[in-house]
Amino acid sequence: MFIITQIEDQIRVLPADLTKAPLDAVTQVIEQRFVDKVIPNLGLVVSIYDVTNIEGGFVYPNDGAAFFTVQFRLVVFRPFIGEIIVGKLKSCSREGLRISLDFFDDILIPEHALQDPSFYDESERLWVWKFDSNDMYMDLQEPIRFRVHSVKFNSPPTPIQLANATGDDKLLGTAAKPFSPMVVVGDINGDGLGCTAWWAG
Image (cartoon, rainbow, N blue to C red; front, top):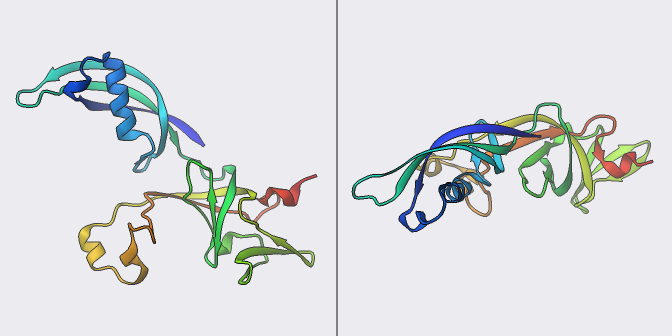
C-alpha cells in the first residue's frame, strides 16, 4: 500500500528561515510542497521518510532566498493492483460505493463490481447484497474489505475545458464536485470481500 520513493529537487528557503539549521529549513519547505499532495503517476505523499543529501545554499541577486539541491525520500500511498485493503464505507449512491481510509477518500467501488446479486435500496439509500434470501445491508461507517482494480491519475481541467463543460462537469473543482487528482477503483465481488461483519466467525 505504501512505497518509499527518492526525489531530487531544488528547495527555496526564505530569508526569514535562514537562521534555522539547513536540514530543518529544507524539511519545512518539503513538507509544505509535497505532504498531502498527489504526485502524478506516483501517488499521495503521506510523509517525509528522510533527507539524504543537501547541497548549495546559493543566494541569487535580487532574491534574498537560498536555493538548495536536496535529495530526500517520501512515503507515498500507492496501492498495487490486486491488493486487499480494509477501509470504511463513507457513502452510497446508485453508481456504487465510496470508501475512506481516513487519510484518503477517493476510493470507488462501481455498481458492477459489487457482490452479485446486489441492489440499491432507494428508501435506505444503501446497497444490499442478496445472499441466500437474506438482505445483507452495506451500512455506512462499517469496515469493508476490497480488492484494488486500478489506480487512476487525473489532470486538472484547463480553463478552456471548464468553459466548454456540460452538465455536472461544469461543477468540477467546486464543493459540489471536487476534483480528484488520484482515484483508486476497487471491487468487492469475491469470497471474503465486502463488509467484514459478513465473514466474521
